Amino acid sequence: MPEFSPNEGKVAIATLPVKPAGLACTAELWLASNMTKVATSGLIPFTSTGASQSINLPTSLLSQCKET
Image 1 (spheres, rainbow, N blue to C red):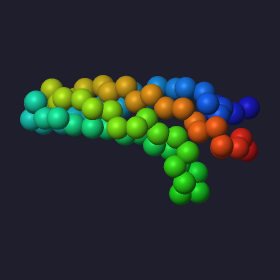
Image 2 (cartoon, helix red, strand yellow):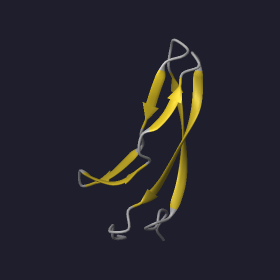
Image 3 (cartoon, rainbow, N blue to C red):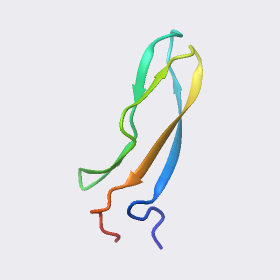
Image 4 (tube, rainbow, N blue to C red):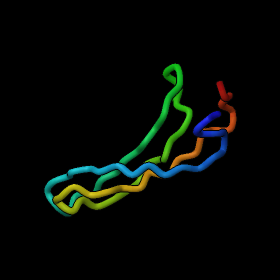
């Protein structure tokens, strides 16, 4: 049974420590199969707090991917 079906949305939560506070940052989550990007959150902008913070990275598997 697949855990991530085509066009199914999921959200990953990444904990990122960025110092100092106040920096403009971006994060991106991507998944690959055979070195080909098959899912991405796109660039998610956030401002650093100076401490570890949780960033939501929503993704969906591209519809052209085939289940194996």
